[in-house]
Length: 351
Image 1: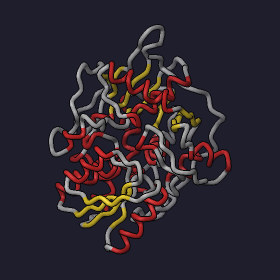
Image 2: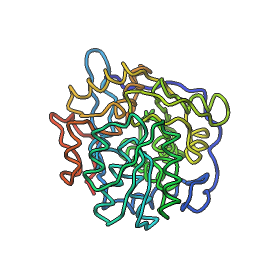
Image 3: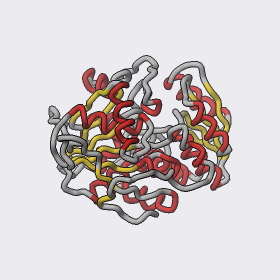
Image 4: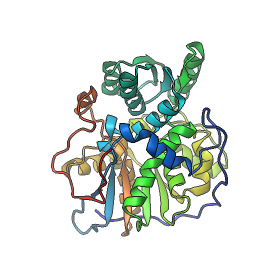
């Protein structure tokens, strides 16, 4: 599989200075928050390796995969969830989530004695909802999409005097997600492009922060059915899209978050859209090479394939919570095992 990239139109200068105090959503965080986040979450997360990507046929071997499908809780979401919960010291938490953020919070809640309520949108994966409940979280489902889910989560948090920990739209969540970027740039400092799956935008914003003073190109990859960041950047302001039914169930956000949007606007180099058929084909390719990615976790690689460029690049495999692997999240291994793992490169010890 080729090492890939795509020339963008250029980014405007990055924002300067930290945002407000990180106990509420606002225009932060700052790159200096990432080392603090890494230290805070170290006991709860795995420092995931870079793996050599599949390279069939004439495609080049330079592409690497950031293996967040091996993360505690099965996805990168553990990073932002842990950073927020530990920094805020909450004993009752409410969130809106498609599944992976809530699974991460449920694991943390069980170990820390926190009461957790999760609001799910229509179409949430039943296996993920079951995993949340098995881990002790309460679930509430709304009839509409992500926008209705988020509104219900806000109202429940106020009613129950709980701390709202959004899946992406919070400075502490973004800073935690940014540790993915810090790690991959430390392990592969000479990469030219990093491809990032983009839903709510927390991971893309975090990688943008990590790359703020690095020459690497940052490319966000969105499902073509819900390109909320591409549409918003084209319009010059956040826009809200209708609910979508993309196979990438973790990337169904309808509107950019207030925290991620300006960070992405000021640093991202390119946004790529990929269709459901591309996503499923890429997930199947990863599975054949021993990388058990869920569809959302295959989106970044699908974008790299669409770009079709030979260069040194990293695609983030953001999650591996496939239905057959969710049973392992009931307190078993910190990451689900894979068979026939590609060769790891730049691997750091796990924490």
